[in-house]
Length: 231
Image 1 (spheres, rainbow, N blue to C red):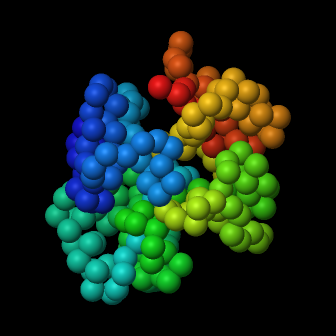
Image 2: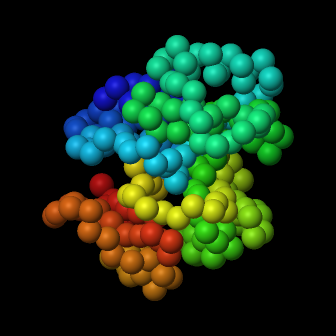
């Protein structure tokens, strides 16, 4: 719950808590799937975070140098701490939330001026081109850029945060503490969607979830994700 409260205050969002999971989303009513918002679900787990950097993290957007400085200061007041992931001298600031999950507060960038508070969900990977091929087919988002070093997708409506894949030299060694949840559209058949994702290269995943209404899968580089059941 503490991590959920942190992210709600960090983003200016609300906490919705119908059960064990803490749901963090934009203030006011909204209906999923939403074309703009990427909600945050905080799920308690027994394993503490290791010293290994998360391979999935959030980048937060800012509108000016003053806004960036103010946001970094406010986040530290809320419990964030500076993090060193080997970034060296860069114009963005790397922080960690109260449980050590890394995230970045970006300097102002024109590309992120209309994303909302979350500029991008960033995934470390070995092959951005291959990841872009999979996720471009997996979701109905639009591929905006793909190179050997970086790939980016965004909602087909041209709004909200980006999903980005960044080439990194390190390999995946531990389960992701941050992962994507996919929600089928109303009228879609969840089993058919799961079968389609498997055909694209996703593999079945057992993380000890037991008998649950969602399906756990891994993308071609082993990043865990879930396909949720329509409520």
